[in-house]
Length: 572
Image 1: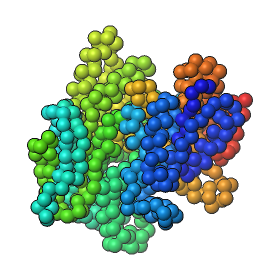
Image 2: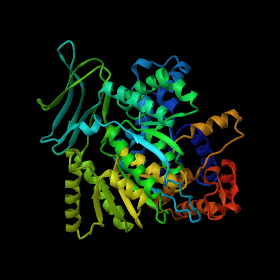
Image 3: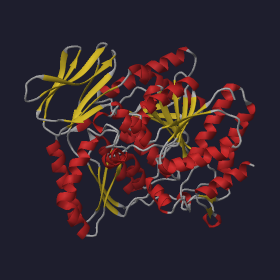
Image 4: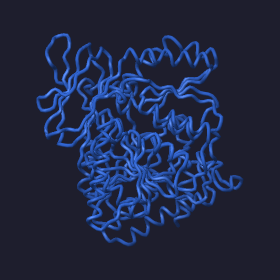
């Protein structure tokens, strides 16, 4: 091979698996150069985020890479790392040092994400019993994006977020460039409303004797969801923890995408599910109500989800922080005040925008992918009451006309609300469909879909940019709980499903082989993916797939090492 393969290392149990996979299926078999970059949480901190920039540069130069899952550190983990490395200046850390690198990498290579189920032939997924389940979803009625101010920019220029506090002097919190037609949005939440909601939420759980679930995206949106989580959990610990424990009830906090996947695929008998972010909460409320009435149908079709991420849009590319004092928040576009609102100390604030040209690139990618694979397309947009989403509708029409002029018929498509899009994907999946979603929705929707498809390790994820840069990754996280067991056992207990990482590696090697005209490498990549699916087809599975094959009685459940050895044997 003349071109290297970019390898982005990660954290915890996923990294243990990744190192075994590279040793077995790359280092010992291929004459190929690897450009390896350590994207672990610790190295991101030690390099003050520079390693993320290095990763983007490497991908842009070489074009094909494989990324492992990495940790996004919470407050406690950050404090632990800073204690371990006292020489690191914790007061002057670049955001790339502590935030998830995923958004920066996707934006850096201008890539959008497509996630699909891996085509295992003998998985017969047990449908979770939802009909009649006593699960209630509780969300905030007001505030947030529901009560945001949003519009399309009328000119190319700069949008600035200004704050006027007790001093009376305007302070610039953030600025970003926007172009004509770009959507932008300002959202805030009243922290007193959040506190009042938290009290009602926990009181309801106690009165109705329900286990308590709380889900937010505090790692990616620390100044917004993180600010809400902090006050909600302070109230829980100070006012309700003892009462809930005395009743024998449990409290669970989890990132909302992982929690949604866990609850939908394995619903508790009785629970109160708190999702304070009302745009997400209303979607999940409608889905849960539908599931309780009709249940989950058999999944005869595999699901594909395309996430719009290249433009840095929605919450993932936002500026977010909690207000440091009472004051007035203003949005100024090229010197003109477009909107102002009062905020109080502690109120979560969020400013986000998107790039119309990036939206157009994404829609073109969606339509071309759907046409190539004969898929129907189901968009989810809130266009009837949000100018921010209306731009997508305009772009879809524009792209259809351009494709028609090129004599490329666009695929069949529908536009519906995101809540209807989610319900259709889960409760009424068509034969072969692609569901394009914005970033946060796509994260949640794809995790739910992957969990219903077997586990998060039975799906593939591809990030593709307009210039042809391809990054392949597993959609799951680092498996922190499994990693703790691995450490406690001194490496003897290794329960982890490496399927998605193997598949990502196979996809990357196949792409590299095609680009260089290297038929033996392309053939090897196809054989590696076939060895993976053949292994599961023979009933050799990791613990997460136990009981999920066509013939559960003949399954052979193995640990991670046993599974990798079985794939290696199938490859030989």
